[in-house]
Amino acid sequence: RVGKMIEADEKLHSETSTHAQPQNMFYPTLLSAMASLGAFMFGYSLGFTSPALPAMQGEIDKQVFTDISCNGDKASSDLGSLFGSIISVGAMIGALLCGKLADSIGRKYSLALGAVPLMGGYLMLCLAEHYAVAIMSRVITGVGVGFASVAVPMYINEISPVRYRGLLGAFNQLFVVIGIFGVYLIGDQLPHSDTQYSKCPDAHSSTIGDGWKTLAWTGFGISCVLFLVALIIPESPVYLLKIGQSTQAGIIMKKLWGQDYDPSLVDNVSVNSVVDNNTPPTYAELFRPQTRQAMLIACGLLIFQQIVGVNAVIFFSSDIFKAAGESDQDAAGVYVQSIQVGTTLLSVFLVERLGRRTLMLFSTFGMGTMSFLLAVFFILKSAGNHQNWLALLSLMGYMFSFAIGMGPVSWLLVSEIFTDRTRALAASIGTMLNWMSAFVVTETFTYLVQGLKEYGTFIVFGSLSYACFVFVLIFVFETKGLSKEDIQLRLQKDMKQSAYSIIGPHVDPEN
Image 1 (cartoon, rainbow, N blue to C red):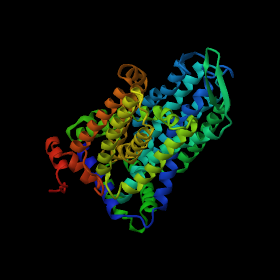
Image 2 (cartoon, rainbow, N blue to C red; image 1 turned 90 degrees about the horizontal axis):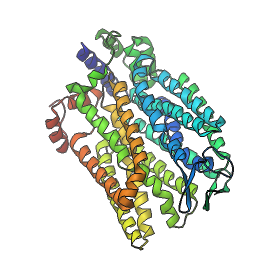
Image 3 (tube, rainbow, N blue to C red; image 1 turned 180 degrees about the vertical axis):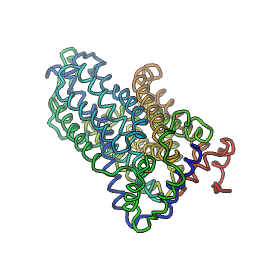
Image 4 (cartoon, helix red, strand yellow; image 1 turned 180 degrees about the horizontal axis):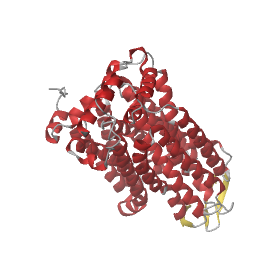
């Protein structure tokens, strides 16, 4: 029964996408951009700590974090570090919750529901005067981020025509990096003052002072806008068909596909009984033979996306720019994020021209190469040979490589390779593993540097990037131009045969 439902469901989505191309892209692009406000808050929340945390842990101004310890001429706070990483724990919870809720209350209402903890978390942070309240606010904010990281790419995938699926699907990561860039830019523009630490007389830095509350109020305001936007956008037609609202689904599809929309497709799906509220998708379905390879690809890519060390590169970016003569850490952050925004925007236009797999192979190989060059820089630096040009080249090359493929394409592939029936649950599992990996890397990074030094750390990350290159080469096939039905046919083949066909020239899945 379930197999027939999946087959009919995929027939609708593939036929509608293939034969009913819209006259113009305005409406689906508008909806994708509106939904991507959730991705913007994803990025804004991730980048929030970079400009805000130094001010929040300043002792002179009696800010939130006062457990200051000294590390040479730098002041640090263990509670402040926890404030930065604990968002991942909330995001894991949000991702798992969204998987089930997206199939019960719908995609748009899941996105709206996710805006509630975002609003609550930022409001709590605005009013926080104690570290416990601030840390709890980040957990709550993380729940909203987890909802957005599942709901946004899923919604965009289900409203996108097949030939524009890659372009619109890349909106998710584009808005994530715009959100990070936005919070860095706002932080850089806020008034700065010199902060000194009584426990660390040699440590002082330029911070935004009480300006971190401005950032928090801005996050609260944008979260409110996201809530309203999520209520305005139409529901995904795929979800409407799942719950039997074929008439409403047809109206939305007609707006999406224009004059080429064929209403018989909706009637055909109803006849084939895609709608069956008595058999909701289960987690067990994700590990059946027809779905197992898709789970391997999704979980592998989303775990690799974090463990290849992108956050470590960003962590060292301020030191690298400082060595090159740029002492303003906020400005250094703006430079790095501007590279991400520009390159991700480029990937939006390349993904339908060069293909997903090509960008992923280029991306992972480039990240591995640049990580090893960073290791060489730190080896030379330890010997007293400061090749700052090498550090800048490696840093910019790494960020370019990540943003052109690994960043946007991983999320795009995860939204493409599952059936409409299992997509929500599968995305929630993959996203939860992504956030878990981010938390583990963040919490172990300091110990890794202490044990292996900087050069050893980047050798590890470079090796993992090359391992991801091999993973993509073996398991990931090209989805550009393939209908949903064709993608499922490719996935349902024996894994060993699939590995050989992926390495070789493209073979029509029908053959």
